[in-house]
Image 1 (cartoon, rainbow, N blue to C red):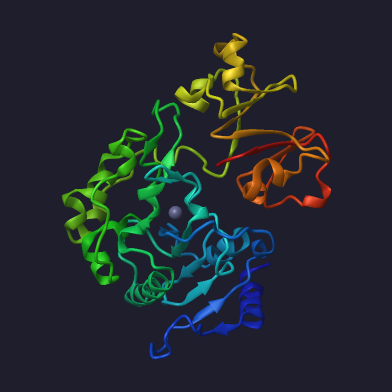
Image 2: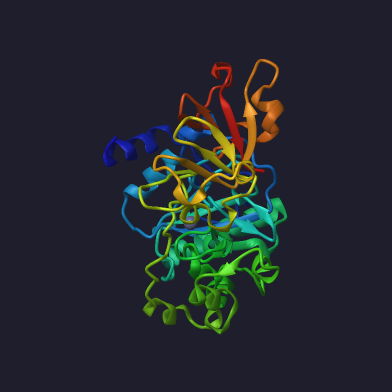
Length: 357
Ligand SMILES: [Zn+2]
């Protein structure tokens, strides 16, 4: 679908809805409901405790279409201040990916994701700020979310160990960083923010981006955001593709590059080149030669091995509510299917199930 067709699609299909949720006294702000195809399959959120703010890092008109197609946000605010609702009110959007806050992981299950079309180091347009303030106020009120729990994506994203960092780390990306600065928060009506990183404090994570840390918790975050724009992003930013849950070992690489110090954990799952599937701790016991891992081996880090689906062991009995989560994986004949793509009527016996808690 090209851009013109897409716009026509929006105009024809979208209901321009002023929700009862939003007071009618607020003048011109309306929300356009765009139906993401992902509305058909996405589960409900487990809770609604956070609002996570993103920047698209592009101002192109294709962005809204991409977000809609992939269901990567609940709301989008465009540069003209128009608000679009992409997913059902209580539905999961996949905006955060790998994320953690105070020990809680996979925040997409607990958060409303808002994509602001713009950049992590620039203040959004005046109309955008106004609309965002309005949207935040309504959501904060109706879900009882504290200002502290309205955070940029970069504050909750984290990276798995990789060739640059041997430990799980904060600073995987700078998405939405501008929304951590005091002047911007003030304009958005957010009266409070986190004063420290709870996961770094207890050493669940290390800091991989000192500059981001300084904006989130230090003096830099108190300054007018103009100061921020001069800073370059480090080369290792977003080195990891968060959408890829299972990575394939390439020639000459070691397990360390894929799983870091989690390589022998029971939550690191190996799909070996010979077809066997083993947990890291099992391989360790078998004295597996981790040093000489075969190229083509696939590794999923941070997964619970659910075992095989049978008539008696249904996906729900194995993974409970996670059975249709997008990050749940069904492996059959070496093919990997995501939980939100699977039809529960048609899962062949012998399909292996991996899920995240
Ligand atoms: Zn983001």
